[in-house]
Image (cartoon, rainbow, N blue to C red; front, side, top):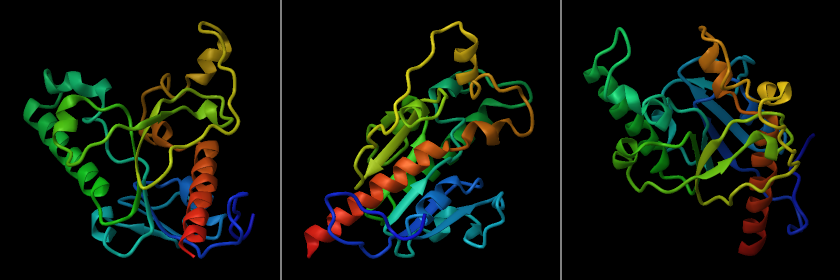
Length: 232
């Protein structure tokens, strides 16, 4: 796919957006937006899996003020922010202390807050459902849209919170029918939650599904086109 694709509400191709994809090493979301002709970069502390020259190795906070039209932070460290990990704030796991758990929470909440409150008009920050201690530490916190991969043609369960500012909620594109609980197919769809422990588990669990990335790129490109048309 080349060039910018616009929807039926736009009369012409708008200028491309300058887009920063934060906390992503897979390149899935970066490539989805690049396919629509945008000037898109990714940044993470780790190198990109696809070795793209459009990937920056560094702290996303060092690049937030560089005139982006859209910021999508896909996988900020969330272990200490999400409901599933709140128990570790009361009793630390083996080898860790409660002081370390709360320090991790403060660090994760600060990163989320800095990205969410960045001087960028259109922002999406991905994160699981957060507990109250995290919400209390994030400035201007807002309720997320919760989406599932199977809304976008992916045979998988993974409830994902999209915290959106200046962007429309995603509309399901190829909604599937989930299999019945207890079936082998249901277990297959739950592979993210059933992943075996290991050094790559975090990477596999955080990866954005292609269908979700494509919906973001297509729908937010269309919204950008409508904005440009209305401004003329």
